[in-house]
Length: 483
Ligand code: FAD
Image 1 (cartoon, rainbow, N blue to C red):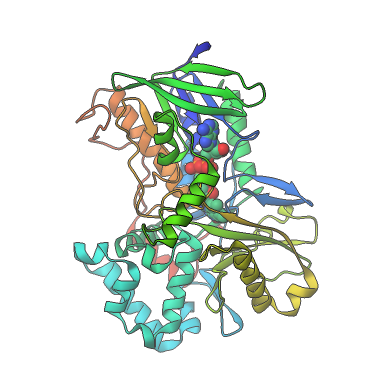
Image 2: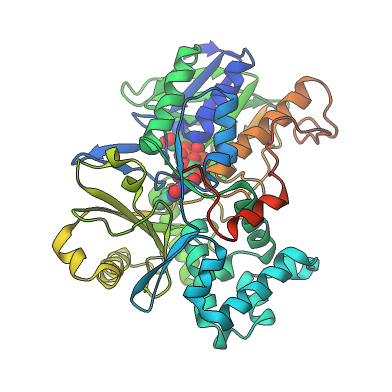
């Protein structure tokens, strides 16, 4: 078997893998990236279908927009990008109407005075008081039921549920009060969500060009089959070239895994995780109610419309639907994501049953409820895809993420199962890479405390801190954006 060595091996060319590669190249390391698919980007890229940018995962949106962690990280790396921040707090579909809310105060029109007062009351407890450790660990729906009369505030409960389903792909009982509190604080302090110019494919494409220009070796259609280690130290990987079937040993003292803890652990045991097996096991666990859903799962619909159905650059939250939690119309920010004169809409929902065909039928029924005649006359469904198993919305549900370190020296995890608390989606992926860099710097400078496999660091240089709390006040009247 052939052998080759380098300074660092990255497993997976998703956003987390590409960001890690770009950062390590900046530190002068020789980097080798291994990706099993024929393209980079993982769940953060797109394919052109009928002239439209159909994403492999994300809805082309960055949760904290141009002021967020990913945008700051890209600025540090001098990666050109442009983000169109939302111009509203959101719009809300309720009682058959879409109501636009420029800032938080606009939610008064959605909830009415009594339930809006309850929202302020909940906000006061979450942000202005210290909740006990027990309260922070409670599922959010349980805490809410202790704080307000949920029967008398159905719109407010639907408001929280639709935001949680769209942004976290979780029901309110699947997320803790502490994680809701931290996530919302970050959303308010960083800024409004934003759509990427060119969509997610443009960003990961730019990252790919950058890492190649800086000398990284990128091998597509290479499947990592095993992690190699000796005396507690990672030594490399065994890979299989999917085109030729040939196997090779690739050696490095540093391996960064962007494929999540389940698949990484399997590789440590010389096994591979298969999508069909994961789905079968999860289905059995759900039927026997054995475990909580470990990851966030969802269903996404791409729709092409002749007419505009969402009149802003932000999120439409759906409070009166059966499944669809929210939608965006990214062509309001970048019209080139769809053919000239057409509008791209993307809906997202949490998968609530084993029956994917039924979930799709409910999505279609919701689209008719939301847009009535306009949906029948002007819209065409391009794709409907379920995201679960090894290709989920989040590999671990928000707030249950794992540490970047592993029991092996030199093996680190990045990506959407390693998000620090309160950092959602790709903001969390970018922060996971920054967190890994802090650990690596500390180890390399000999400043790490504790064991080398699980070092503790004294100072963070790479992790991006949230801006001032006062930033949150900007949301009262209108969404803080750049447009
Ligand atoms: P991945 O993108 O999964 O990358 C991992 C890569 O590793 C993949 O390319 C995979 O092929 C490769 N790989 C796996 N195993 C191996 C192996 N053995 N050998 C070699 N390669 C391997 N985030 C947002 O910020 N905004 C959104 O609007 C948004 N919407 C979303 C909507 C949906 C429906 C989904 C599914 C996700 C959404 N997300 C969104 C989440 C976002 O897409 C992910 O957080 C992010 O793309 C994860 O990146 P990653 O690098 O951690 O993992």
